[in-house]
Length: 112
Image 1 (tube, rainbow, N blue to C red):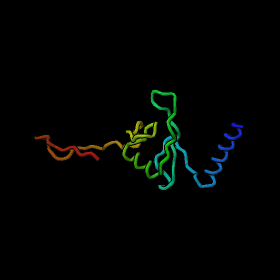
Image 2: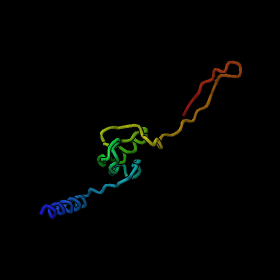
Image 3: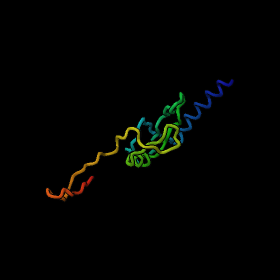
Image 4: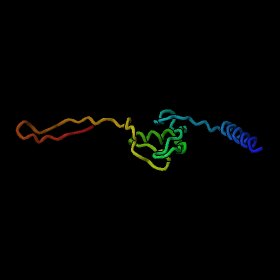
């Protein structure tokens, strides 16, 4: 009896999500590409120092894009904004010297 009830609940939840238009993309590393208002979910990740998984984290693509732009991510437990552990979206700085001269060397370093 309990097994049938559980199976019915799972099937109903899946059907309800589809019927109500809760189509959410899933990506192991959401980066915000696509429709800014669409929702993308990151699957559960292993929690540090634990065998357990954290929750699935869902955000709009515009929210994921802002996080990546700022070099940030969401922690495995879904509770905090953390520095992006991969740091792949942080552009390297392009630095050059300007001004100064051969006699005083007092130029200024400019980074873009």
